[in-house]
Length: 312
Image (cartoon, rainbow, N blue to C red; front, top):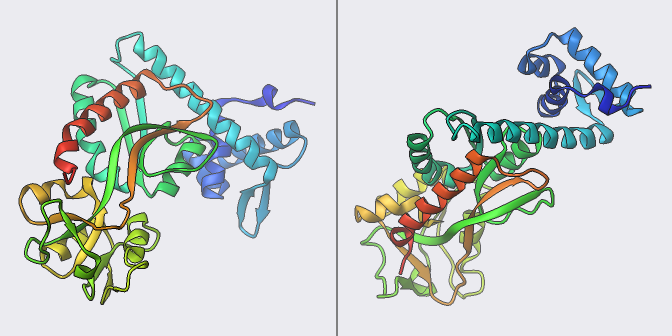
């Protein structure tokens, strides 16, 4: 009977990963670029080699079994290693060729990564860059499935399969229009200054939202209305209109602070979350030359904006 080592090839690696993502054999086959009958034969061979079913049917959908999830995780690591090998070979040509598959969570993906990638492309114009931006949970799934080989996130990601390399600091701060709050010389306000104020928060699941809703919990003061808005930009627009106060990453308000449209503040005697912008990758894979150079570019970019983003 054949083993998994006997039947592995890139198409079968990718098929198992895509099947976990889409739960549809036809969609997975389309992404891999093979016919559905061919995909079915690949799955049959993988089941035989594994000695137990890797895929099970649930209604009209397919899903990976427990064994299938284990094999898919190793398949993703193997595929990432192959992509890293391609980039290593590209480094022998002085980064004149190769591919960078990068993921990013929403804050760095919107406010940090694009500027850093612009510099990266200037220095490495022939490296093909693929960027995917989503929630932190999505980014982790993309890494584990092999869709991306590294990702930029804010805050701690707890997954023993991933390794995080800190790149630079991030901080969640209060944001208001200049006329709304009387700030001290240290950019602080007391909790009493927020009593009855309208709180502007992002959608459920945002770490900044969770912090904002709990910031007055240990004080006798409370926010008045709470407006749930759909994005960082929606919070910033409402802040500029003087509708209330929000709590956002310092990286998201650099331009608005520079133009004098908003002020940033901390709440006295309330601990402010200090996070790290980090580069994530699978723990069992080495960084490709393109990824190592991107890390250098990101560190340099974050160092340049640190003074602008910081409150004091």
